[in-house]
Length: 102
Image 1 (cartoon, one colour):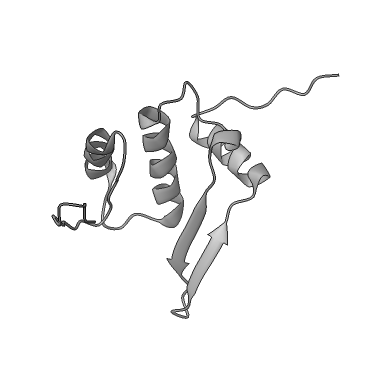
Image 2: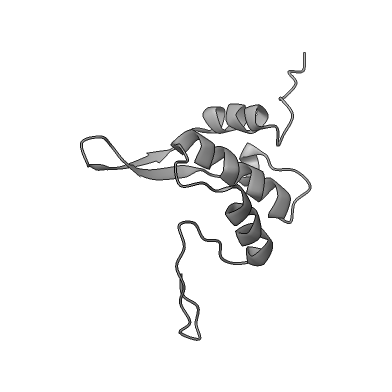
């Protein structure tokens, strides 16, 4: 991570923009070296829900994509569908399930 002044720094996870200090603190507290992809996504959603300037985190305010290595060593880029993201937000507990109206 670098900033316009030329200062740079590195860590296993980083945050930039608004609320980056609070975000970085939360990440450092909950991050562990053997974190799984699923745990990492849950951590990201938890951190975003507490640091974004919105009253609630919903799939309409968020897009999620992952970049990861497959066992073959190939880099994979995967975009989470809105339906999957909505279910994930409920599972993590950062939003309520949508109610269906008649």
